[in-house]
Image 1: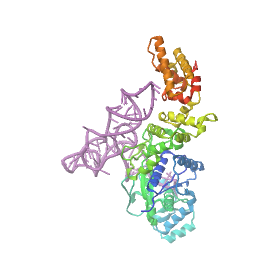
Image 2 (image 1 turned 90 degrees about the vertical axis):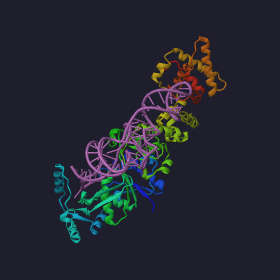
Image 3 (image 1 turned 135 degrees about the horizontal axis):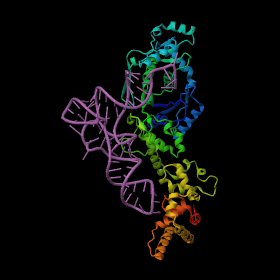
Image 4 (image 1 turned 60 degrees about the horizontal axis):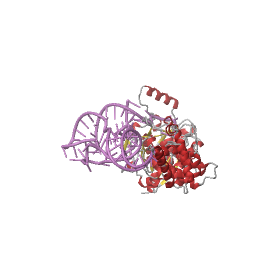
Length: 479
RNA sequence: GGCGCAUUCGUCUAGUGGUCUAGGACGUCGGCCUCUCACGCCGGUAACAGGGGUUCGAACCCCCUAUGCGCUACCA
């Protein structure tokens, strides 16, 4: 079997959305898995809606996800000439014909029929069987007065869909559809076939919405005697309300998820699980795992709902498993953490990341948390303040803790903990009442971090360092 | 309307005639761990769209119905 060549062919009318990204991903994963080629084609023939900005947005989105095409990008618009030539070749072969009927008349016929819920089919009997030379002759005499239509033969077309099973369509359901408009521009179904053949694509994985285009395209391949590629139609991605995912569901551009603190690794992992599974219980997978395990025969034909909760859970899993250095980079590098403060070392930042990475689900949370290591908190959890610091004694305890820490010969995890426990015992002895360690620990954490939750206190203490710890603990009023 | 596609816990899914009193994951609930939270661990909750067949036996095969979606353009 020859090399597998797959492609992603978005039309640049907006950013790279989640559905498109999933389609691209499945193509890319398969190419990587099987050792084939992943191609990219920009279908920019719709001049009204296509923009260079959108092309850029798609490229940026794909780069973020880590998918790069293996060959130069093909821009469909640049192949306009070939598309037109293909239409004429089709006439040459008797597989297409020139239609001189009035499009306005046809349109009104169609609308009338549709109004009564009846099926409209173009009747090409007046042009279908005109001898080729006569057609060509009239085309020359009446330029701009005709469209070219594909002649649909009798019978039916079927293909063995990679995702579904065999799909069969009777040609009686099909029109002699237009492949070249009166204005000389080719129609989508024609351009796609021309380009896919040009790029030697032999497996087309695309959205479900193209199922009904497939027989038309196969007919063109066959008319040209070209090898028909394999097709696989991926199900849609839905919003929580089970309607096709769209802008009103919130973020649908992959870039939005980067802004939301998502690791591209997590996004890829999550997208891969929408309509595909390993078959065992493996869910958290690296890019490399996915490439190794991806398979066509395990793609599901059923539409899947995009579940943000699971996406963020997966993100947390990936963050927790990642090396601090990797996370540092993914968060936007050192400046994302320290800004212009050059007194903070990279080692310090990495330590902060290590300390917090298992308890965040988003990168922006990680950045904010790690900063606690070198920035005094300015905001304090309101609930926590109410609970832990309403008792004036809490401040006293923290101050005595500061004194004790300051006096410590060695500022270590165990030494600081011992010092705290000692104070607890001392207070217990002095008052005759059992004092819980939490009476020290909780206010202390709050003063140090501004938060009520976080890593073990003495790990935090060590991360912040003696000088800052003492300073923060001596705050007497944070309200 | 026609044609096509789909239908297992709230969600993602495993399941290809007996191993299914239907498994896993997210969520949720309870518990353990613990200075808190997270991680981790243990446990609970919750599904084969409906109806007919075929078969000794059906989530799995066939038919019908329902529901949802897509297409039905000289859009892509």
